[in-house]
Amino acid sequence: MTNVRTDWTREEIAGLFNLPFTELLFQAASVHRQNHPPDQVQLCTLLSIKTGGCPEDCGYCSQSVKADSGVEATKLMDVQAVLQSAAQAKDHGSQRFCMGAAWRNPKDRDMPAIVEIVKGVREMGMETCMTLGMLTEKQADMLAEAGLDYYNHNIDSSPEYYERVISTRKFEERIETLDHVRNSGINVCSGGIVGMGETRDDRVGFVHTLATLEAHPESVPVNALVPVKGTVLGDMLHDTPLAKIDDIEFVRTVAVARITMPMSMVRLSAGRESMSDATQALCFMAGANSIFTGDKLLTAPNAGDDSDAALFERLGMTALQGEEPMRACGGQAASKQMAEGVPAE
Ligand code: SAM
Ligand code: DTB
Ligand code: SF4
Image (cartoon, rainbow, N blue to C red; front, side):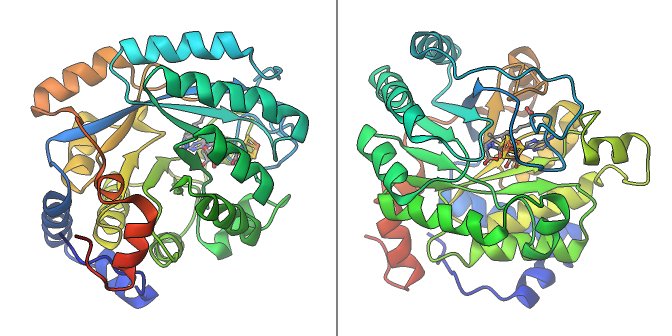
């Protein structure tokens, strides 16, 4: 098992990014196979349980009221409809059901339905993940009590670049919610987006923030920007001057996340639809070991089950069986211990 460090410096992380590509990939693949089965990928399914009309101004997001993306605002879905969708995902082989709501934060009046959903999906034997925006301590505790397995809350980019993408909340507020989630005992899922016009140095700062949290997130989603027309960043990408992220630079980011957070699940998240099979294969080689399946993310199209089945067949890869390493060895408490240099048993 690789030693888990939370004392990475920005210089060390920049040094990893600067390695010759073949050397970086070799190091990442070595760390990967020491801690995870290298031919298995976790399958997760996403469902938007409350779409659009979000008051936040995240420059990438189709669901912001500030975006002219054509996404219609809906109310929170009925509990039964969510459970039906989860059953379908389970039939398609998904291990985890991730539910997203286009909220700045859940209102207290929303919590009873959310709690019912978490309990229902868990009873079906699937892992649950939710992403509902900022949480108070009390709300995090309620979700923990309901049995929520994971909470997704992305830091999205470096602290410096964050404020150029979102003005309606602060980076520190994201970290505060992550603290509430961690303290409640729910597993943390936190990552971000590559290809928003940030520099290499911002990508260093992004990985550095996650890799120096007191305990690493159990899941680290790395999204490639999906350029949605009508969003600030999507329009910049369609009409230049924002160029699509270089595939090799994207793979480098995955590799550096894998090396610095060896036990975490690194999720190749949004953006796979426009990625070649070869680039996705490089991401798996670099340590990505989780994907979203199905033909839709929250509002944007996803690669789809058929193309994923064909890709897995081509690569000789299979769906992850069994438990993730950080959970198998006792979850965040164990990862904290390891971070403090006490080896897990
Ligand atoms: N409203 C909640 C929040 O922002 O925390 C939860 C939903 S939000 C859509 C979840 C994450 O999806 C964002 O933090 C962002 O990282 C990612 N995301 C949203 N739009 C995206 C896009 N166009 N391309 C890539 N990732 C995107
Ligand atoms: C994450 O990091 N990526 C997922 C999930 N967490 C919630 C969301 C991707 C959204 C892509 C754009 C869309 O579907 O609107
Ligand atoms: Fe709202 Fe989340 Fe989209 Fe930001 S990313 S606009 S908070 S739904």
